[in-house]
Image (cartoon, helix red, strand yellow):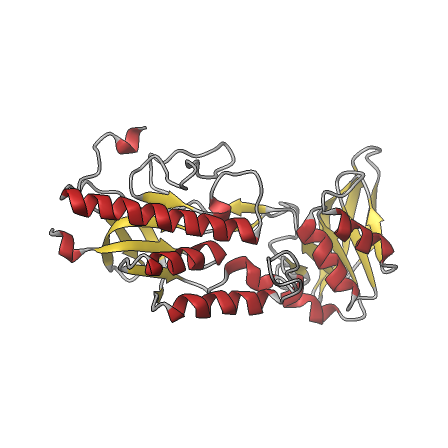
Length: 324
């Protein structure tokens, strides 16, 4: 296959990292394709409000996602609504396979597949998903207006969602397995000042009680005393973190014990021409602004990589790359 038969860059995933990568790739005049199987913007679409995006003290998550998408489209970024089923490194180029059977040959790939909500793994959780169990307060909070709900978690997402639900629900239990929150201090202060929020410390949900109408209570266990009790609620919202969507990471790419892709400072994996960004990448913190920075970094690095390969006339990936 000649170099003319392949494109410069494929970006898999259209969240803040992927869209930012698309913007910078187009600015670098790279022939770029972004593939996203869901709504562009990723998890940011699920946030009622974003208050830590520089220059925007308060902006809706969906609005921010739309602005990123429009920005990328202004540069002419091609966005394909499709599902990627495999990313296969090659000696002359990499192959991105789509669900419909199409194969895309490319010099470089940026994996921006993000993460998915971590599950509690308790009885009733999967059975009653959509019937009282939710992982998105913005999506489902309306259905619990005037009702009692429980939120599980202690980080920023859990507290943000508890505050959002307090605007709608009659009462909000915030269940956390420790005796103090991990959320930022400003969010903690807001939660403590909200009279509708009741903290359930040192506790974990062990079961979900439901009937034909949906969730009716959750069983919580105190991790110190072992005592169990039921909280009468109509809904359970789980925010205990995310797990990396690493199913498309090629074999041979270095990963952490938790399943995050290990990269260098350029977001490059140990397989030349393949980069990992956003919530998929192993790093200290996971914020929208950091995901966007990853996208910028990876796109700049990919542009340099592709230009160097074209200039040298060498389009082969070193045979030992996948074994490092």
